[in-house]
Amino acid sequence: MKAGFLLAGAAVLAGRGFAAAKQPNILFILTDDMDSHMEALAHMPLLQKHLVNEGTVFSRHYCTVALCCPSRVNLLTGRAAHNTNVTDVWAPYGGYPKVVREGINDDYLPIWMQQAGYNTYYAGKIWNQHSVENYNEPFVGGFNESDFLLDPFTYEYWNATMTRNGAPPVSYEGQYSPDLTAIKAYDFLREAMMHEQPWFVVHAPIAPHGNVHFAADEDDEAKQSAPKYAARHAHLFKDYKIPRDENFNPAVQDGVSWIAKLPLLNDTVIEYNDEFQRSRLRALQSVDESTAALLQLIDDAGELDNTYIFYTTDNGYHISQHRMHPGKECGFETDVHIPMIVRGPGVARGHVSQAVTSHTDIASTIMELAGRPLENTDGSPMPLSIEAEVAASKTEHVNIEYWGLAIPEGELGRYGDANMTDDYGAAAHAAENNTYKGLRVIGDGYNLYYAVWCTNETELYDLVQDPFEVRNLLGTNHTDLAASLRIADRPIQPIVNRLNALVVVLKTCARDTCREPWKALHPQGDVASLHQALNAKFDDFYATQPRVYFTKCEIGYLADSEGPNYVNQFGGGIHEGHISVSATNKGGKQEGYNRKALDYLGPQHRISIWT
Ligand SMILES: *[C@@H]1O[C@H](CO)[C@@H](O)[C@H](O)[C@H]1NC(C)=O
Ligand SMILES: *[C@@H]1O[C@H](CO)[C@@H](O)[C@H](O)[C@H]1NC(C)=O
Ligand SMILES: *[C@@H]1O[C@H](CO)[C@@H](O)[C@H](O)[C@H]1NC(C)=O
Ligand SMILES: *[C@@H]1O[C@H](CO)[C@@H](O)[C@H](O)[C@H]1NC(C)=O
Ligand SMILES: *[C@@H]1O[C@H](CO)[C@@H](O)[C@H](O)[C@H]1NC(C)=O
Ligand SMILES: *[C@@H]1O[C@H](CO)[C@@H](O)[C@H](O)[C@H]1NC(C)=O
Ligand SMILES: *[C@@H]1O[C@H](CO)[C@@H](O)[C@H](O)[C@H]1NC(C)=O
Ligand SMILES: *[C@@H]1O[C@H](CO)[C@@H](O)[C@H](O)[C@H]1NC(C)=O
Image (cartoon, rainbow, N blue to C red):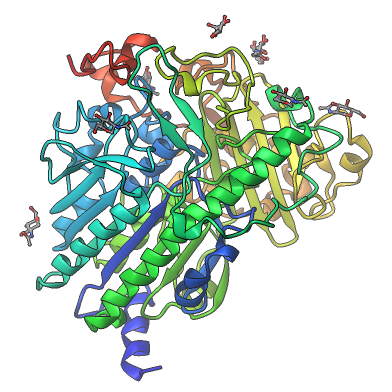
């Protein structure tokens, strides 16, 4: 390794004092629905060679909301979903129109990068409900050049429709979408490297998201299916099977709400699901190749020593785990624990970081590299070097949140009657009551997932004993196990009381409170971890905190249905949560959760959601 390489890295990564003379370039690869738990990374040999072996894998990286659009907003703003209030993929609670109305299109990472002197480029999918009809109302902000996939063709692997720099949509019938967006990313990268300024280039292919085909015939339903792959990858992974882990179609089902009621999947579904995952792995091969090709271009230009490469996805995925059909939207590890790899100057090679990080941290991480640290986000810069990892104040929590339905994405899935719309038939048969507040806590000697659902049911998994989250310690099936749980020598009830209070804080946290939630409860600053909070002297204090509950299962962030937003502070006083007042509440147009809001997807209506 070159000495200059190490020195430059140390200067940039030592933290606050930015001595770095030159702002580094950033290449960001953002896949769609990629899993960590069905071996996706292990099946990407070029990624292994160029990123895993040459960079750092963040082995405890999480998305905070397991759905494309809200997660991308979280990633590109550094704000929790309850603060962006983009919580869905469609109007009225999410999608591009909501992004615009919340002011995010004028105030997010690419804009901040431009303000920091970067040229910015984006190829692929950015938002949902960013369509052939609204792509110019207004144009996506913040990119010097862009080529965006547009709805309703976003997930058509062989019929992408894209807008380049805001020009009228162009159809690419017959071209393979992940290869197509890669070619556009190569062009942008070459363009970027011709200028003096540092650059931020994003490639966001749709792989390995399922294929969604919108029939031209207005009577036909849209069809979701496994992703399509290129012919050159068709021969791969014929023997692959989804790992038969303990959570794979379990003989005894646990969990809460609609999940607890799921029947066993039969052999037909299991086989279909294995092939579904094989298709995902094949679709990812295109991304494996293009990521290596992007690195080659950077290397050829001699820029590799001044470039950071981030590789991640918007959310995870489950297939057959917990008896579920292909999909996301859950708080299980399959859905929220996702791949994150960083390579660049000063980032340890072949290292696996144990730091607990999330998508809320990414904007802060990138802006710190750009030399313009952010102050108003809910996250903090990820510790990219080993020195920073050691020095970092030990974050041990991830605030997981979700509002809405759970949609089965395979062709065989049926959960319920919650038809979203007749025009988007693929989304029908969704499960209701999938709104919850979750909390991951990973500290010295403990590893927990706790959640409170809109049905008021609660879940607690001890991932030390139960890494596959199949034994809910707060249900009726595992009372013995629950009775034997000990953390810091304390039993389950004091533990749950602490977790409950932490969720009350996190569900309306903003900025510092999201980063250091224990301080809301202990303003003296003497408690910074679950372990410290478990001191018996705080037992009465935690036993009398407000409880997390919902009065109704809403499909969006309607604060009135979400119970109390304050906690008592140790030593007296009250900490009040922060409820973001949504732009839509400031006089913007309100759209009901009804067919009309989605009608633009149906060729027979063609109404603009902006009229
Ligand atoms: C990219 O856009 C920014 C912001 O508009 C501008 O300042 C910069 O000059 C642009 N770069 C190029 C190469 O046009
Ligand atoms: C491909 O997309 C275009 C719109 O860009 C559409 O007009 C055409 O019907 C689509 N082709 C197929 C086979 O679906
Ligand atoms: C508990 O176990 C029984 C069988 O022992 C099973 O029928 C039930 O679905 C399980 N799950 C829950 C959430 O009670
Ligand atoms: C298996 O389950 C699927 C989905 O529930 C159902 O459509 C199918 O009929 C079942 N097949 C058999 C052989 O029972
Ligand atoms: C959903 O659609 C099915 C048929 O497509 C219908 O039988 C059912 O009543 C609908 N459910 C709701 C809640 O609208
Ligand atoms: C959703 O939860 C409510 C409240 O607990 C319950 O009444 C309703 O039956 C649930 N709906 C479904 C589809 O499970
Ligand atoms: C949840 O509990 C609260 C407080 O006890 C109660 O007001 C509410 O009705 C419950 N919600 C549901 C969905 O059962
Ligand atoms: C979030 O947005 C929805 C839809 O516009 C709105 O009804 C709701 O009040 C907003 N929530 C908050 C807390 O502002």
